[in-house]
Image (tube, rainbow, N blue to C red; front, side):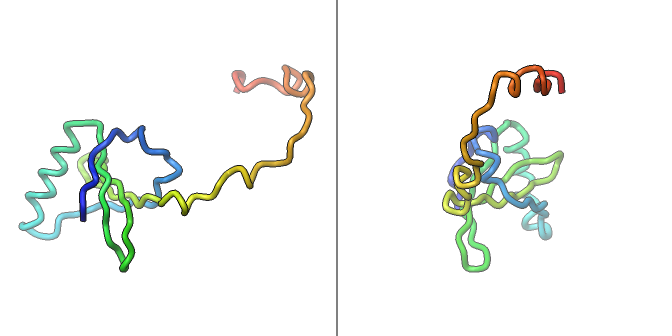
Length: 109
């Protein structure tokens, strides 16, 4: 694992955050670093972005604290995220009646 730095969680686009896994310490040797990392993350509202090799592939992962447990989230690389413009419907005309109170407003939901 290589640390690429800490940052606020809200600086990461949620679409990049993938599956999450709880991390556990494996024995007495790992208990101290686990506790130190947990304390470091617990004292701030930041998360840590780490480079991690898994199954021969380098990944970026996000480490965060949830309650008292460390959670590792896989992050998607930019080229793994689909461009939403190809999913948009074709342009259409919308009248004032259609966009007005005839169909209700979002504020009433």
